[in-house]
Amino acid sequence: DAIDRRLNRDTWLYSVSSEFVNIGDYFLFRNEDPKLVLKNCYDLAVKADPKSPEAHLATARMALDKSDSKVAAQSLAKALKLDDTNPETHYLSAKAWQATEPDRATEHLQKSLALNPKYVPSLLLVVEQKMNEEQYAKALQLLDEVEKVNPRLPKLWALRAAIAHLEGR
Image (cartoon, rainbow, N blue to C red):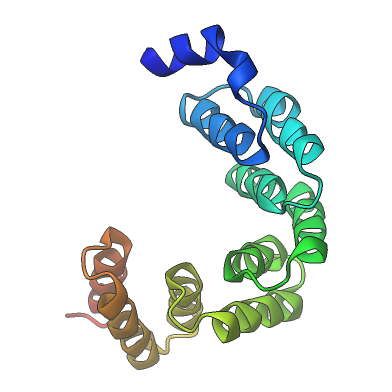
């Protein structure tokens, strides 16, 4: 409620691209209409700072959450033009291309891990791929790497449990 009051009362305070992205993320958290968030927050963030990839990344995350790979891929192409050194951009690109162009997705995933070998979302995506290929030993090795970064990550333990179940343990 305090955030809503502040946003309604002091709208003139928010004019920086990152603020629009954060406000958009807040509205999505509150289950607001994604089209309105895109128009009223993320598009404004692009206008406020056309050289910042953050609004494009936020749009891509929102599109992937809504299973709209096309919009995600378009936003990620713009983000990559602005900055291709962010592992998250390549990770999201891998997710966007995963279903339609697996080779392209693999390239982005490899680039993400080349930029940051300990980038947890990319590592978890590789774990899921290894599980689909029934390479459980390799998946567990990767989960050991994830555990070194964040031992309290719920998805880490869920994947370990899934592997144990698949192996009949």
